[in-house]
Length: 528
Image: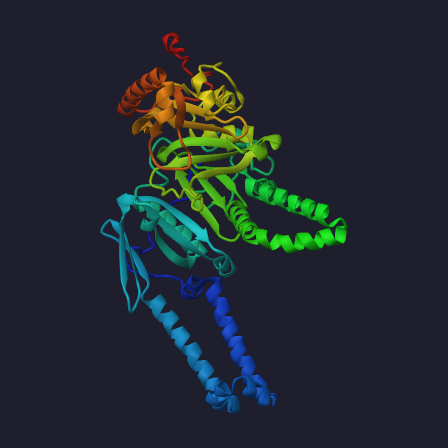
């Protein structure tokens, strides 16, 4: 499917102004609320005084204020003039902020200037641009505006935001910047976006060839997550379950101590404020998760995947396939009865926040069935085998070419040591761990930058070691703990050779149909 032609007459080489409403939107909801509250209180005091109600009540409570503002309360023209002056000053400050905020693309870089007292001039070379996103915060949605976020190598501090532009203008600027940066969601052989993908069979997803509003180069939508499912998955979290258990325990203790239900409720009500800070923190975290991943949609453009998500802050993110360094899927304990999984990726050039507050570019499926998770993983990396991924997610033991951790590891992990291990395919390394909460991580050999072998004091006594595959930082951790020392040493040596050879070769295009089972059985001499 051909993409829409890119406009070349936007005049980005000349200095461009942002939208005139940008200063108001940058103030945010808090600024608008404070300004509105101050204005309403001021006007209310004026009209109350003009209506004859400004008697001794206000003077007795605050005589100094009444004496200082008495002229304003007694003369409506002066009060109106003061109000207009304040509004004029605010408008002048906003106009100056808009007047001095400009951007352009010239000399191989994008430049942004702002500030009329304290001035700032930022420059981002186009060859350093990693991604360009569209974001629509809540206030911007009401006014039909968007902000363009230019991400460059260097992490979150290197972001350049053009806030705000008209929605259509923002899409045009993003498309032009991608073309000028030589990206177009990155060069490389494109996979036909009309090729059927298993994830497109989910309810609500359009059929092959159909397009949905993802922007100027949105591709084909292959997956969407219902907000109802996301809400249930958000509630099924360790924090909310802990809070519910604590509430039940509090109620049970109160009932046992007081006897009657009314007194028990009174005692529980007295004890509940102690859980207030914990409940508030959990509620903020869960609501933030829902707002961030709501309205989730995934599209395939052939060379990248495009993600649209957000309830209050709608964001469109492009993840080029060749920048994905590792993929992984996780199934928390609370999701196992429903068979749900979450898929995340490590992306080169994307800063990773360990708290998970900045995972807009690393979550490619917030919640979905196993089939949907496997469809997404094989979409991200066609070299992966769906059969091998399914065996990694649900399997146990050494069947299918898996090398397990040493039996001596049960001292560290008595529950899942029979499941944890690794398997090697011609293209990648696959790691699985966990029995209650399952985790599967995959890293291509070509993405391995270094390997680390680590031993703790107890591991040294038991002749064990852990091996970590190091690449781009991200939420996917590719680590095999508690291997037999000889197995760990051989794995580290062999994987270093495989990674070196893979980086020297161009990646061979293959699919799961070409390779029914890509896993390489371990050498019999290595089985211990």
